[in-house]
Image (tube, rainbow over all chains, first blue to last red):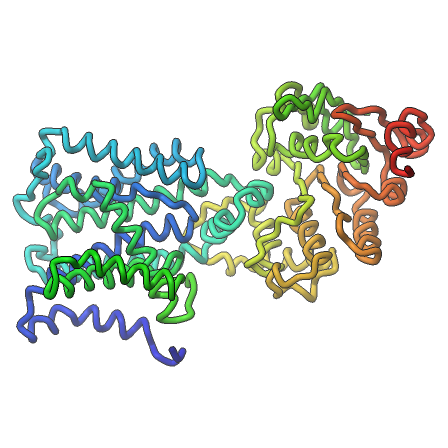
Length: 310
Length: 252
């Protein structure tokens, strides 16, 4: 790809115009789908920060994603519908949970870290499911969408733009973060934690900060998805959801800033398209994933441009 | 003499083997103290124990009178104990300059925290300038922009030293800095270390006896996890027990 193509402005311009475009095509139904893509892109980006930037292969990201959704649903049930309060609360609870989980999990490495984060996430899943107030197996419906004065989230297009704005802000934040002192330290930790420790860096604290930041953004994505789906469901907390987010990251490009966005768009797009033709869409999605891993180990973002972590 | 660093009865075992078996060692401020001994004597283990990458099974460590036995490696670095590695542990995907800049940034005492999330690190020009100075000091000014993995072996060792120095240690632990170097490179490294003498305290593991006798103010002989003797190069060289246990072996 030539460097002259203004990749980012084109992408964001198209994304901004999407609701009008779909509306004029008479396909307003797809605004909901596009919103879902953005929300999953946000969640996958947050996981990519933990996995690709922090070097921590966490297999329990669904816990933070799901908790964010449940905070919004429970707050709504308690009469708190303002997104200005409920969404930051969702982020805070996800961050706090990640702090506790990370404190224990980061004592382990590699496969053990994968297993222990998975175990904690499943514990949260079973706890929430057995919790009557949270609707058990059925999940918890939202009486209405969050209110985000002066915006009207009841409008599908508004929810889409809010999700787009939050994704754009997160990707910009990621860019700043990667170039900051913290980002440089984190890159060192990913490459050689022992060396960083020997240079005086508090490695575990850096990893914990990365894990907590990733979880907070996942909590925000969960809050958005509860609004989009009209409910918080146990499936959002289940381990397959963690797996799905990891697949998006790998498909899109581990450690690439746009990896989460590309992965989410490709995976959900593929599922949606295949569903029109076959009932075995998972099989083909699996084949596509194999192809990407075999032929483009750096993921779709790696194919699209040679840009790396910037 | 008040010791800057004191090890008292340090012990460490791996399985049934005592790699460190009751080591007492005292480093005076600004001395270059060499640690010699046959292979498997426990020299590197002792460096691990002092730097904090291993915890001793018994014994204490004191820095300027303060007990630091329970301190982690990064805390000890912040207190002024830095190690270099036997096998260069540089960040191969980063430039030489960025390697050293990271070392500067890690210095919490005066460089500040790494928990800064917004401002670009590249805007802090002073860190880059200081990194350039360190590179110049070890003779790598020209290679600042090279990726560490593109550097020659000897250059990587010099980079390793620059990174250790950039943490501004009071005590520098050097684990075979000459290992694998050609005669010319070893000569240069010897000069670098000689130039550092009197500015900081060094504990040097080295196999080349000529280098050790040239550089060391004092040296300790480690055999089977124990200090056999400590003294000036002349007294150690003359010690019959040392000749039997170590120097004799070298000649054979």
